[in-house]
Amino acid sequence: MVRTTLKAAALCMVLPMAAGAADANWAKVADALGKSGTEMPGGVYRVGLPRTDLHVKLDGVDIKPTLALGSWLAFQGQGDMAMVMGDLVLTEDEVGPVMRKLAENSIEITALHNHLLRAQPATLYMHVLGHGNPAKLAAALHDGLALSKTPLGNATASASPQAPAAGSEQPARLDLDTAMIDQLLGAKGKAVGGVYQVGIPRAETIKDGGMEVPVAMGSAEAINFQPTGGGKAAITGDFVLTAKEVNPVLRALRESGIEVTAVHNHMLDDQPRLFFMHFWANDDAAKLAKGLRAALDQVNVARS
Image 1: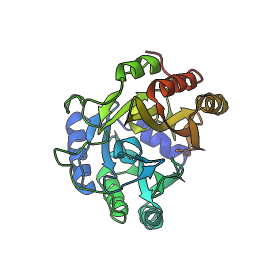
Image 2 (image 1 turned 60 degrees about the horizontal axis):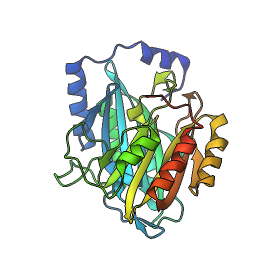
Image 3 (image 1 turned 90 degrees about the vertical axis):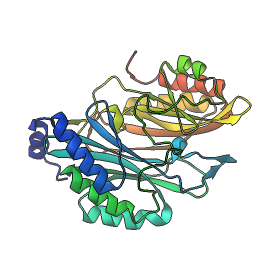
């Protein structure tokens, strides 16, 4: 995308797609990408691309795809055009070929970084952005992903998507006190692929290039719990922070025995300017939930 005020203004002036047009565009996106997604709140079409092909271990924990290996792409319609954002989980040898192909097809790379430390094999996370015809964007992203081993094609009934439709799966039983987690974090989570996922929106409206970035496009605090037995859980995710929140949150996490593993950007032209803080721990789930609550108390999150 050419980042100019005129282009941002032009995109914002286009009327949102009517329902029928949106359905048609999303069908074309699914066809071009080779994977169907789910319509989410905010007019977002989100496609989960979990790296089920990878077997990653960290500190003795086998990482489930829904804990920290969930590639995703989210399309937001703007008239006949769309904005796409995403986070692609890649191995070190996949980064170069995927980046080259995406750049050739005018998909912007907005960040490349780690989320975890000590994981074997190591994984990197490539954030992408594009504006244009939704099917063409999907085709460009497909061509890039095809140079990795990211599983494409629709999941079988036994597989768990990154962002399932509300009510589309049977409630999963986890070896976790999820009611306690909900109470401490002040938000209702959901079980996906053996992981308890909690999303907490910020109070502000997040924008990138003048366009709103809904929760389904990665603007919320994301906290994931994977049971590891005996009342313990491995946790990871990211806090979405303004500059003044970074160090208070870092201190709160560290004081609770939660490791801060990365601090970086995901977007290039965000308003307000945001930083994403990733974390890791494997400990008593109640202790970790209290530590995460202490960190959330330093963040301007939306109040329920």
